[in-house]
Amino acid sequence: MMIERIRQHSHELLETIRGFRRHLHMHPELSYEEFETSKFVQNQLKEWGIPFETGFADTGIVALIKGDLPGDRVVALRGDMDALPILEANDVPYKSTKPGVMHACGHDVHTSCLLGAARILQLEKGNFGGTIKLVFQPAEERLPGGASLMIRDGALENPKPHFMIGQHVMPLIPAGKIGIREGKYMASADEIDIWVRGKGGHGAMPHLNVDPIVIASHLIVAAQQLVSRFGNPSIPSVLSFGKIEGKGVYNVIPDEVFIQGTFRTMNEDWRAEAHAKLTQLFVGMAQSMGGSCEIKINRGYPFLVNDEALTRRLRKNAVDYLGEENVIDLDIWMAAEDFAYYSQAMPSCFYRLGTRNEARGITSSVHTPTFDVDEDALPIGMGLMAYNAISELMG
Image: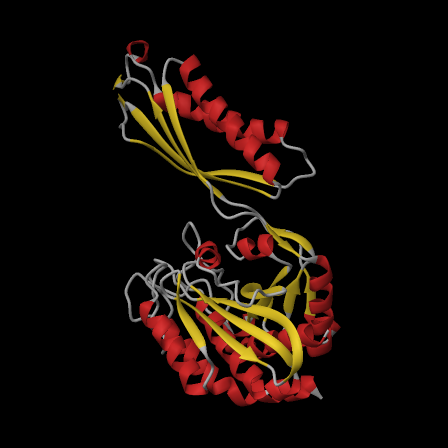
């Protein structure tokens, strides 16, 4: 039976894939710098005799596995490769050897599991028809996002996939389980830079100044009200400000305040409208208070939508592979992922691989210095992805 064979392959490959994951974890590379990681992936593909092409988004790789049986369907599987600028705090044998760079988002797991899936699919190619495209993608963590560049460089052409499937570690879900959701799942994400300018001076003589601190305070509060009053309550929206910097002191009003924030939603029309309204509000309110405002909105990733029909099929696959009790239905999540570019280009599904183990203290969130994964998730990560690909080719 296909499931049993894939489970057996995953079990036999565990130590190899664990070794891959630990090697990548020890040698992380930042977005757009994944040169050694790319070489590592290429070497494994060469060793297994899996053909591939390079030159996508500089370090990206696209490999093809063609089944021996008749079939013309094409399914793509994606794994991202980049790390984050975080100093690792874990005391483990596979700790990052690069100070200030760490696989704190699990991309070492994604790359390793995609390699494992590739090996399984190669071993099983006598049992399916069609083509599986393996997309090893750089730079998920930084705009404009490696996915957009992979698409730009033709990674989804020749042949064009009918479906795209991706997975991501989730430390909120116990190892042994996966999480999945139909329809809109993750938000768009835009970065906002704001410069509020006034006229600085002595804090004891505010009437002689134009206080950018006060203006900035009003802008932040008013922006929250703009989103809550103009945005349709049925459309998820988040506006958060993470930085406000005014370089005065106790009794010195500065000339300028710098603010950074993020706007996230799940509707492109409202996204564009919100950009325009925020710009109008900030510029107009600053002027009405005697100052000025410059705003720059860096348009980030679009929202991520899981094709409903494909996701239902993959959910059934997960139930067959893991059991109903190990498949969790997820809520929407206002984080962002550049897999969204694929989901806007073709029917796609992006699901979550549980990696939590409270008994072993593996509970830290992604993007933290103590993030780690329960490596017992690796067989599921590679096996379920391989099973999903074959099921879609044979469906």
